[in-house]
Image (tube, rainbow, N blue to C red; front, side, top):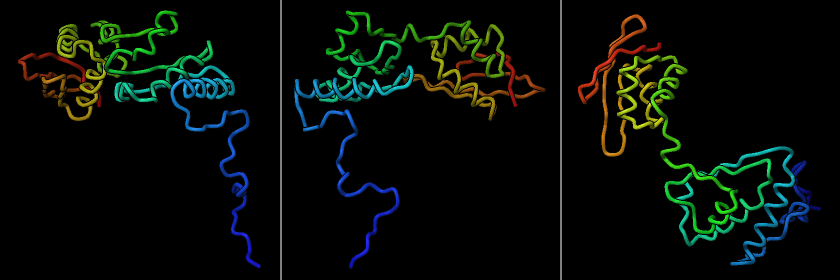
Length: 201
């Protein structure tokens, strides 16, 4: 008699393919049926959450405009509980199907101008990272990065480790080298700008 090879805790053969309780069965729906399925699925999924949540969808622009995935995402967003939200990042405007969320005030779009940090915020970021900058340095960095926070952080971190700066912004590359001297230093950039700054260890 052949013995069983099932591992303790492994699902029984009869349980394979069994869906979680309460979730709708997926039968390869299309069009309106797909949207209806997605709404029901995400409504049930989100109802199981034990508190507020904020799923993040990054690089939505990578999804083709004709993809059915956009229809699924639209349906999912419509089922988000009031105490929760969805954060979506994209390099292009929201899909046409998302327009109704803007009309009803359920969606807020933040463009580049809204996300760009000003000179004061730039100085605070540098200070919080242990690298206080003089006013001239703040002005130079803000002009060169155009408020791009990630670019600033990369420059500061690179300087902290090696004393060298390099930032690529679009087609332009800004390079520089810092010299150390008891926690302070000077930095000269490829555009001729030079200023003093604190260099962390």
